[in-house]
Amino acid sequence: MQNSEEIWRLVDERQQPFIELSDTVWGMPELAYNEHRSVAEHKKVLDAQGFRITENVAGIPTAIMGEAGEDGPVIAILGEYDALPGLSQEAGVAEHRPIPGAGHGHGCGHNLLGSGAMLAAAAVKDYLAANGLKGRVRYYGCPAEEGGAAKAFMVREGAFKDVDIAISWHPAPFAVVNEANSLANTRIDFTFTGRSSHAAAAPHLGRSALDAVELMNVGVNYMREHMPSDARIHYAYLDAGGIAPNVVQGKATVRYLIRATDLPGLRGLVERVRKIADGAALMTETTVDTKVVSAVSNLLGNAPLERAMQNNLERLGPPPFDDADRAFAAEIQKTLTDADIAAAFNRAGVPVRRGVPLADEIIPLEAKGAQMVGSTDVGDVSWVVPTVQARGATYAIGTPGHSWQLTAQGKSPLAHKGMVHVAKVMAGVAVDALRDPGLIKAAQADLAARTEVHPYVCPLPEGLSPPIHMGKN
Image 1 (spheres, rainbow, N blue to C red):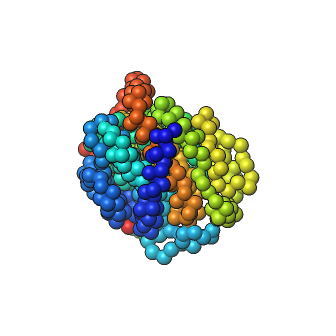
Image 2: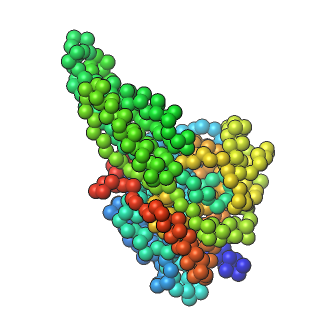
Image 3: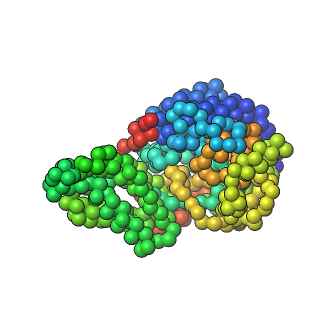
């Protein structure tokens, strides 16, 4: 208990610069691999806190690492700071008010994610120094989680090769240990090339690349009946071939996002989609070229670390929200549907409670929620380092992810309280591991058992570079 109380006190004492960092990053939303101002702000705070700084981690300009301590175990705490397009929103208001400009916004709370993770790392740094302990704590500033798979590239380049355990978190409506359940995925661009011609005077001379894309989409839609129900496939047109209907489109590109519960399943599904693309090219007498943009693995759990995190959550209790926080969250809930609110409780695996705008309990470790999952590049870290994640209660229950409502709450007092709360949880797990070498050994044994039959194989094609231009405005 004393260890927990000391590290939590350190988090409380150091919280203000990190709240300010979170708000600053909220105000400069940048897309994947283009978080140049955001990473500069993170570097500034790392330097002020006395971390040894490594820039351009894994050759990625917006990836950074700060380290403190000497010798001993290496504890990694992972942060993010990328935003999303189309989610610009005025802060602190419960109505849709986009901010003029590029239209980006922190609709997934990554401004909080990076700042909260660094707060935890800073507290652990000071704990090591105050107690004369051997050990190193690292803050990894990881860009491009939203589709860019930066952590997968970082894993491939060995950025975590000497790390003993990794800890992270994500904004959520509830305080809970994150269930290690995510989908492996890959993004692939399919570019069809045909032959342009006059659509009225010489249609027979044209070969439509747009027709090929549309036939591919139809084929994939028919395939949905014959693939695992927990797999997902999405697509978006990157280039539909132009805006002139009287021209047969000679070139068109579609991006596919293919997801499956594990890497072997993903590889099989990708091959089926590739065959459909080949068939569409054959039917239209076009050619098709493919380019993998990114890929991530599914998450692996780690029972010893999850139990340690749950112990910290239960000792700490729920975030200290006040009446003003609950009132603002209730106003946000008025913009949501009953289905939104019920879905949040269902995902947490607890009964629906009406009239509860903010988390007021710790979700039990054994609670199993509805299996509606996405993907994260933390998955690749979890295959090579024992990894645990928290969900930090930082927004109104029912708030959809990737929404203006989430952006609106991103620099509110309730978000700050939730961020500080989860920083205490992460720092507590780190201290438990530093104080108890047996926890690290148990966590590493758990990972070894999970990867014995299927060792980690990086899902990124050999030679693929990080798509650092993918988030250009």
